[in-house]
Length: 494
Image 1: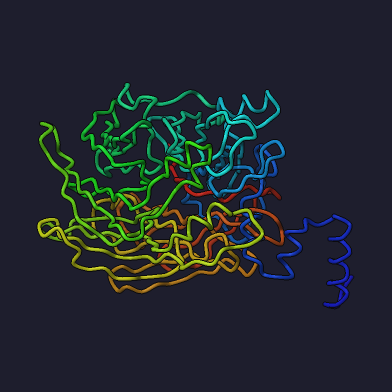
Image 2: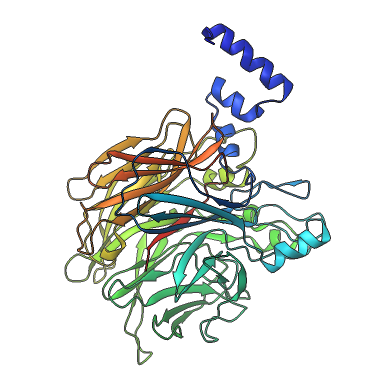
């Protein structure tokens, strides 16, 4: 049967009126609405389970063998309470498992203590980052921001508390990781630890959940799993520090001119509403020497312009006393308004963040270069084997959570960009670099990026050649949709 365009439109209108087609999905097809696309990419996961025999467009490279794990806030409401903030929702863990050209998908809500208590009670007991509970009852530590492999297990990371230990096969919750007691329960723990590519040792940080919010920087041994505290640095308030960088000799953290309004928190308002941007104060870069065995090393401070920053690319030492790095920075406080009203009907207007390449001189304590490379991009990734060294390429997603998005390859040497579009009614999330060979070669790899199709109301995983961005395959999620979320990592089969 064939339809004219007018007949097809009448059919779709009738189907939408009868409730046969999700109204947000249908509306998106008629009107490219950013608010609807953002709601769709954060709607509650459609199911839990394991799906194989997935539909594949193109051909999955047989050289990809292993698993891409991803985590996300997995629901948009909690027992009838509509969640507001992009960061709200119980953790939904997914995995795309590759085996000699075949792919299987698994998805499940992580059964954390907080989630299980709410399910048993049948009501919302705990406040979310941006949505208070009907009756105040504290918060819950949901591993919904990042997931990493660590000594045979998965660590789900939230920034609200200790890492959650997750079984990589069943996705069962198996407790909290304190790294030999060095990360106690009164500390937060970053969602973005950095790893030495040679030794595998972890560098991480957290803040004390009590005044003055002292920051702890820790180093964790890969072989033993034990941590040691390298630095303790008191703060003047409770700051937002989401990411950091690692070079051969320094662990680099930027303290942003952002802080939580304690008066607002004392009146019961959620963290997402209480975060403030002091746009007239500087950003402070601290370069902590990695070798602090005797406890006498001191961080080197460099003042930068005021920025809101969530993510960094790579960093390396560009000559004596100089560090170069990439970051995605915003100078518009309305970005927080966008995040706290993510699932609303209106998208606040704001200046889009920019990808910057910055070089600082530690001796002169100054910025010597700052160059804009791209606009409206997020989630920078690179070949992680080059952490702390000069990498040529960076991969980002543009128009994040919006239609007609692209994977972007940034040539840091030539300062040029190359794009691969996902499609008019599709969006794309974090691009993860997967090496083709054991030899470090940035031109020899694959890009894995999870995406969402608004017409199908279905997730997919896109595979592209890292050098050319040529299409290799698109793996569909068996009709399932779940929030794109933020971060994940690929681990090769052992």
